[in-house]
Image 1: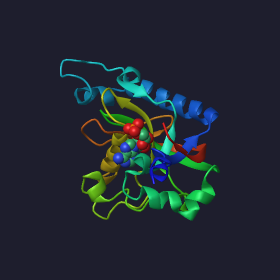
Image 2: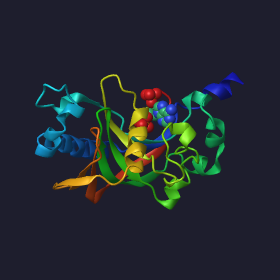
Image 3: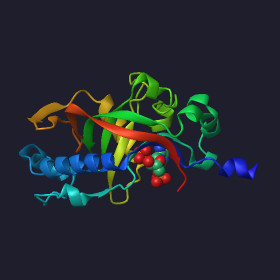
Image 4: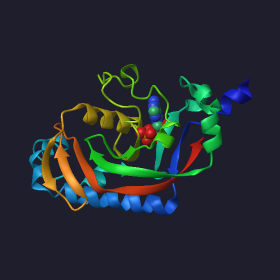
Length: 218
Ligand code: A2P
């Protein structure tokens, strides 16, 4: 029925509690502020700015997001494949409204997006759809190598005109590349460069983020 069709959300996911949103947002801002001052970053500045430009302000470059969350299932109000099945899953129903502790293990930046990698526990993986990392889904060859849940992330910001769905694709792309060269030891962890403006900072201390499993209707 029409009611059933429209009662599915835009997406399900873990929504960071508000105090945690501030903490994660500030950590990301500090990272961007430091990254664009590093010589290693400036060496590859053409990835982000025109050839002639010597500097880029990453804080301005990205439009930061308000409701920080880690999408589990994008349902598109029921139009996305597997949306109805996901919503009916007993684990999804049972977990709805519960608070989980997410582990943020890395921050990554590309010319399109900035995000945080989320490393899911076995329990959290029960809420993760099976086909999210499939090649047919993401359009890049991730051939069997990436474990389920690899795409889990929080979109922190997007460059002008870029849709947030890009963040997960950027993360998967980084994960399929050979480990980048370690360019800098930062206070937060070690920074690696993966070419074409792709940077990843593995956090020395993962950020523990309390988040409520729920859905967004928009
Ligand atoms: P993400 O999870 O990377 O942040 P939008 O505002 O574009 O409708 O997106 C709403 C949310 O759903 C965002 O969090 C976004 O990306 C996610 N999303 C949008 N499209 C898709 C998709 N095709 N597959 C997976 N997640 C999506």
